[in-house]
Length: 118
Image (cartoon, rainbow, N blue to C red; front, side):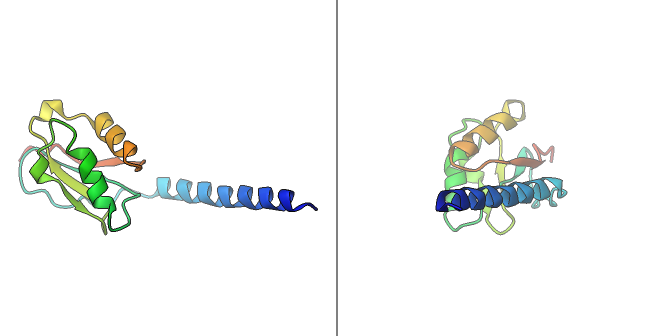
C-alpha cells in the first residue's frame, strides 16, 4: 500500500466526517433569537462566528449594506447571532446579507427574526 493511497483515503474519511457533521447541524432546529428592543431589528445566525475576531469581520460586512444602521450592529460570538436595525424595512434583503457575510468567509447564515414591527 502506497503512502499516497493512505493519505487520500484519510482525507476522504475526514471529508465524510465533516459532511456528516454539516448534515447533523442542518437537522438541528434554529436557536431562539437574541432579544430585540425596537422596530426594524433583524437577528441572524452566523454558525461560523466562533473566534474573537469573527464578530468584527461580520460587522464589517453588514455595515457595507446601505440600509443597515451602522451603529446598531451587535454581534454575540457565544450565541453566534447578530442583531442589527434596518433603516427601511422594504429595503431589507436577506440574500444580500448572506452574500456580504459569505464574502467575509461565513456561510450558512439563517434569519432568526426580522425585521421586527415594534
